Image 1 (cartoon, rainbow, N blue to C red):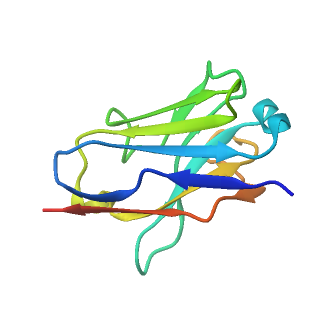
Image 2 (tube, rainbow, N blue to C red; image 1 turned 135 degrees about the vertical axis):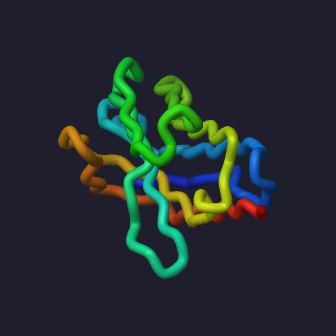
Length: 121
């Protein structure tokens, strides 16, 4: 069974940086698009970023473009999300995902359990 395990969440202040990581249990996932979604309290889950299997193509939601950077290491079955200049609006549970990208968003097939990111003002 595919498992995605996120780590790196926490409580930070506005303007700080945080790095999330996702470890995948299956090496075959290195052939798929991986990404991140987030869900703030009382809101729907929203797409954050995605990265192609090769790592050469990356996609970002407008809200995080220029502040977040997604990367992956297929040899280690890991993916990361470097989050800079964090804002209180970035507060959410962040989910690691695997699934195709359709040009506007990712369509996750597998989800991690999520990691909480809280940004105080």
